[in-house]
Length: 133
Image (cartoon, rainbow, N blue to C red; front, side, top):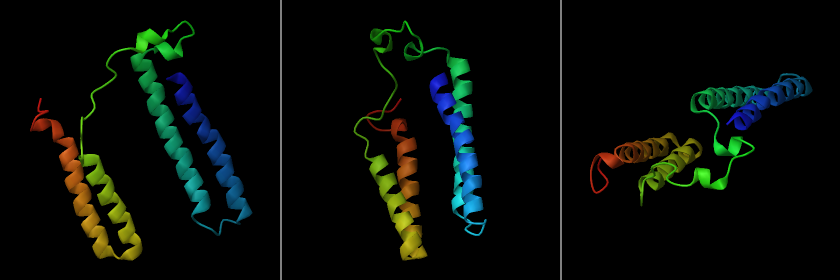
C-alpha cells in the first residue's frame, strides 16, 4: 500500500503548484479553477494519508513484496452484497438529485428522497431477509 499512498501524496506536490500557476494565469479572478485544484490537492492528501496509516497497520501485502507470489492472495478478499439492487436505487437518486440542480429544486428533493431510501436499504441489507447475519 505504500506505493498507492505515495502516489496520492505526490498529487499534493502536483496539484498545489498547478493551482497557483492557474491562479496567476487568470489573475485570481476566476474563482472555481484554482480553488478546485487546491481542493483536489487536499483530497489527494487525505486519501494518501489514510493509505499510509493503513499500510503501517496492515503491513506488507504480497503485491508489495518482491518475492510475493500470486497464490498468496487467493481466497476470499471481502464480503460483497450478492444481487443487490440498492446501489442502483442510490445512484438513480443521486442522478435525479444532480439533475434537480439544473432543472429545479423540487426535483432535487425527490432525488434526495430516493437517495436516502437507497442508502438506508443498502446499509441495512444484511440485517434482514435471506442474507441476515
